[in-house]
Length: 159
Image (cartoon, rainbow, N blue to C red; front, side, top):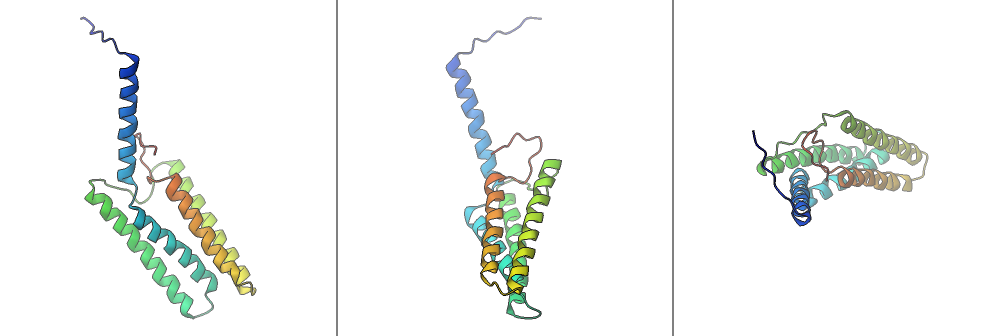
């Protein structure tokens, strides 16, 4: 049995590492949704939080909350469909423990923002609903920017 010895230069090694890095970035772009779809989902999340904070018994804000939840579901389905058209089979929920922890943490923070915003809005401080909507949208912006791919365990996609 004989070994093939290949002399790799430093430039070849750097070129190979750059090629791997570009491939990872390309894969990350496939898992990430379109910018306009992310913007619609983020705006919908902010409006949903604002509507939940302003909702009193049965007024027009209840309709706003219902419509925004339906629109958020539609943007998620559209995101899955666009990913499928690109040849990517995307998961809605993560499969790793760290991914699940991120989802739960984002949900808890959003729920606390909604509860606090509703409490202060019901107490007569109406700008609290605006602040809660903006904070909720910013939480989603952070999640979309920091964790663009839902969960790609074992694929090596980090970006």
